[in-house]
Image (cartoon, rainbow, N blue to C red; front, side, top):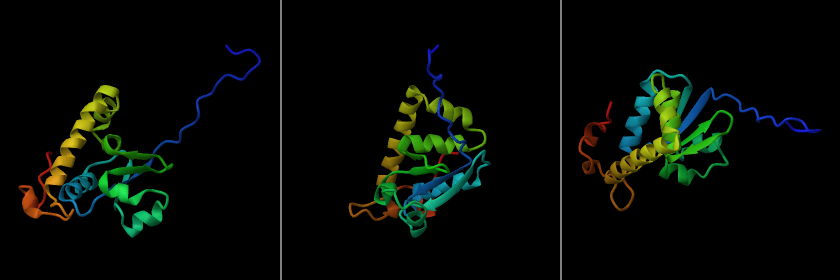
Length: 151
């Protein structure tokens, strides 16, 4: 107990009621995953906005929009910004049926697993692009008819 001082109080963190996922609309894998997010039942509302778009730049003028094109970015309705593995975990957290998985992945050991999954996804994503950075539809089997994302 503190003498003569107020007890420390944890800051109040507002609940997250909506997230915005900024994804690369030119990446077949990112587009497939965003479509899956759109179709899944949610516990938290999810807005899907192409990264680097005028809509993204207008909504989030302070973000590094070039960076959002390189790495998935999630923005919470109170201004929280999550990137990479953290962003993937937040996406899972927002979906019905995945909250416990997201909680497990948010631990130090779980985050290592999430980071490995992000690295694997980045490798698949890189395989769909040539050296100029433009999509190479022949680079990933199945992308000509839509990327095959595990269910």
